[in-house]
Image (cartoon, rainbow, N blue to C red; front, side, top):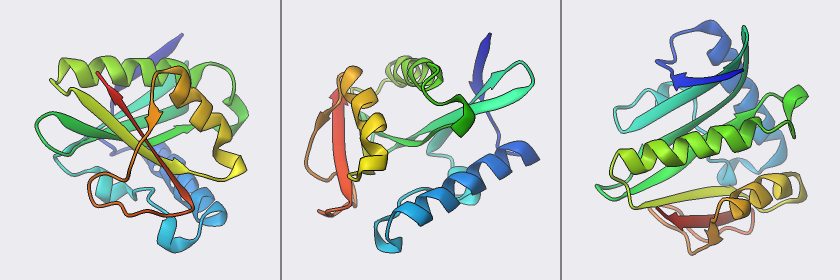
Length: 152
């Protein structure tokens, strides 16, 4: 059974998991278009980070970053590559959406890649009601980025 819990990012397994995420994003996206956060950036007070564990195995993660009192950004969504398309991302996103509402947010936005590799992620977000939008927060228009938002 999948257990999703707030993670303080102190363990070596999550550090490796996130390092792999950043490395993969760098291999797929030009440096100026890469927005994946490093471990230290995820430890800021405006970020809440969750890990998804199946048995003893870390299988996914996700975070939200407070932008203002009503608006947050979805960050660091990742599923272990060997577990992709097994429902982990859906369970994690459902959990994060519920938590974001409980925290009082009325809008959740995200940036993801626009390339073919990111198509499954964009479809997942659309399935959960996210729609394309203009860049938000400090983002600028970028052909490598797709911006999406959802009212909560």
